Amino acid sequence: MDTVMANPLKEGLGARRRPEPFTFVIFGAAGDLAHRKLFPALYNLMVDNWLAGDCRIIGIARRAYEDTEFRREVGQAIEEHSRRKPDPQVLDRLLSSTYYLTADFNDANAYEALKTMLRDAESHFPQNFLFYLATPPSAYPVIADHLGNVGLAKPIDERHWVRIIVEKPFGHDLESAVALNQDLHQVFDESQIYRIDHYLGKETVQNILVFRFANGIFEPLWTRQYIDQVQITVAESLGVAGRGSYYDQAGALRDMVQNHMLQLVSLIAMEPPVAFEADAVRDEKVKVLRSIRPFSTRDVAEYTVRAQYEKGSVDGELVPGYLDEPDIASDSRTESYVALRLLIDNWRWAGVPFYLRTGKRLAKRATEIAIQFKTAPHRFFEQTDTPELAPNLLTLKIQPDEGISLRFGAKVPGPEIRVRTVNMEFLYGTSFAGTPPEAYERLLLDAMIGDSTLFTRKDEVEAAWSLVSSILHGWQRARGPIPTYESGSWGPEEADSLIQRDGFRWRRP
Image (cartoon, rainbow, N blue to C red; front, top):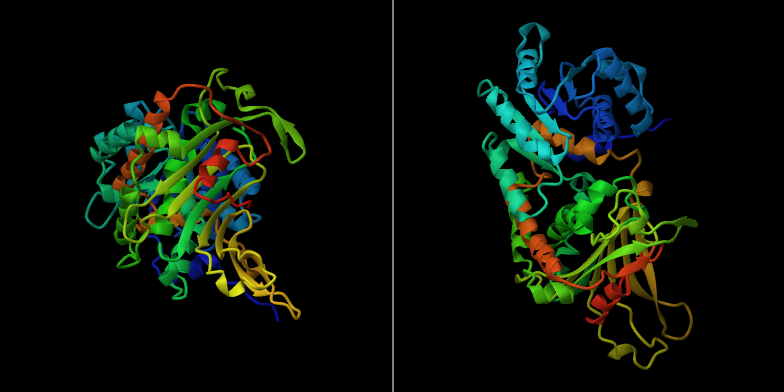
């Protein structure tokens, strides 16, 4: 008898309500993000019956398309990037609800045309609107302003809603982030704004909260009394991958630390929320970010490392150095690697160092959080054949091999007392049947139903930028060459020195 596989997305959402009929408007619909992530996510949500049949999709971009041509391209994108092989009937249903509007984001007439299209009674577009800005950040305030000018930023009555999803980066420093938030708030209420960070849609990231707060065995140990250090690693084997012009303006600190990695820090370090609701969860995350000790100029020199990759070999392939990549300035000082030592000045974490590292062209692709517990007293084993006890280590593996590993000591069989380190492993792929949903599926669905728990709030963004900007200002004052590391290695020697000063070593994923 065949077993019917449960849909993990449905299991995770339980009895939550389905989205009401709505119109999804994608600005930048001809771009890579829409084709690789958004349209495949919409298709899979329709497969799982999360989208009402009368939902509508409108793509907007400068490129000239007729509806039929655009639908053909969307279908090809879903064929290529969907986690499932498309079902022709479901795909036809999605494409028949998809429309296109050729428009320049700076042209006020384009928004009048969009308004006419949306308000046309004969077209039957649902009057709940979800706007997605899959555009360069410079277009965010322009689009928001024009939507407000034509009256599309507010619902037509109290029974309907309007929401806007903004992609990262949310500014490039604290000042620009504050200015962007002010621009958006001129038109939209904070409750309408959904700042998306796809890391928060990953099942393994969401599982951090479940692992901590649904298991009584671990939460009592989640304090400075028992934890020695925390390491968060986001390693990439790829280089700038054709994004040189963007990356050379951003760098690893802005691209990864300000958003993804500080989100992981806040989830690991936060206090239990009073309820699993958007503001309750985000309140606790903000408290963590505000508790991170600020960096003085001296701290930046002592507790941060930045570096650029040199040529080397990754997966057996010779690769160029950062300065030899296309669209990278020959005298660039932009970092492709960052390592940081953070301290969280609150009761739970006082004195526990959090080490963060991220870089491109490292030895392998891996994202994980390693929590090292304090070593057990050795006195009982001093007269045995165990010269040293290894500390217990809990590792939350986010990608590519999603799971959780617990390292502990066990007796080696035999007459002598010898302790050997062993691992207890949990793997998502073997424990849960079925293909887990992509991050954008979960996040889009949450925006559709109005759940902002997994989206970043204004004060979260600004608290993260406050910390990162202090590091950027310190780096701007620094002189001398930027350290380098060989492609295919685990980073520069300076990063090893950073953690070894505290008596620790980087874990090898």
